Amino acid sequence: MKRALAFAALLTAALASTSAAGGDRTVTLNVPNMFCASCPYIVKRSLEKVDGVSSVNVFLFERIATATATVTVTVTFDDDRTNVAALMRATEEAGFPSTVRR
Image (cartoon, rainbow, N blue to C red; front, side, top):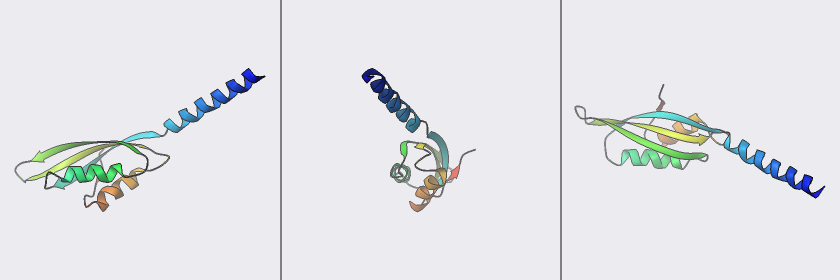
């Protein structure tokens, strides 16, 4: 009986941890019109503060002719704790409106 209860407890814990990790999702955002070297850092920090975000990777594409750059940001997040709209709101509140890359 003790073995059956221990096995049931172990199985329950394993299933709970699997379902918690099952909500991970990745989205890529375009953040245009960067004018300084600290802009990508500001965008990254604003996204890292969103509850549920597990990783943020920033890629900078410079346009030398116009002296601007577009940042592409890949964000991995738990869609049980946040959503794409919240991520876009975070970049906008930091002064950098974003769009979902299609």
